[in-house]
Length: 120
Image 1: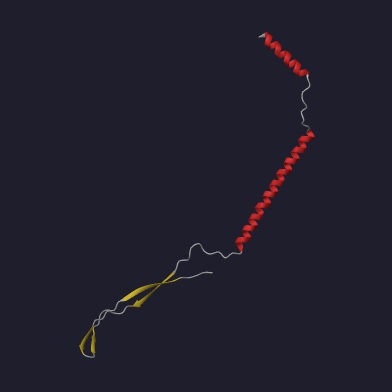
Image 2: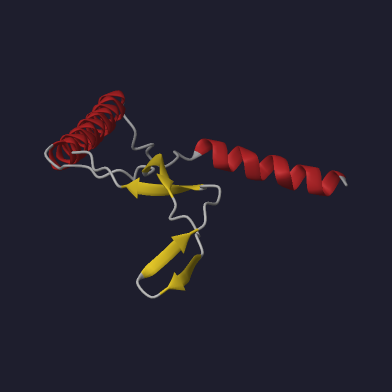
């Protein structure tokens, strides 16, 4: 084991003496990149807001000038009237040219009429 430990110590010592690769990052570079990202996000937000505003304006403009029809027609107006029915009166002929009518009770019939109404 001591032999492996010595080899590792020698390896780390030789690596520590050699200069490493350059980092490539500077404070100015990081700040510039952050500004670019922030500007891109701001531009995307402004563009999305403009698209939403245009869509809302277009929707309002297209639907505001149109006459809307109701989804279902209105219920018809129902009126009832009493109409006297023709009485069923039997007639008999007693002699030529002479008819007799028998009186019976008169009945009435209720009729229902519907008149459609339109609204504009």
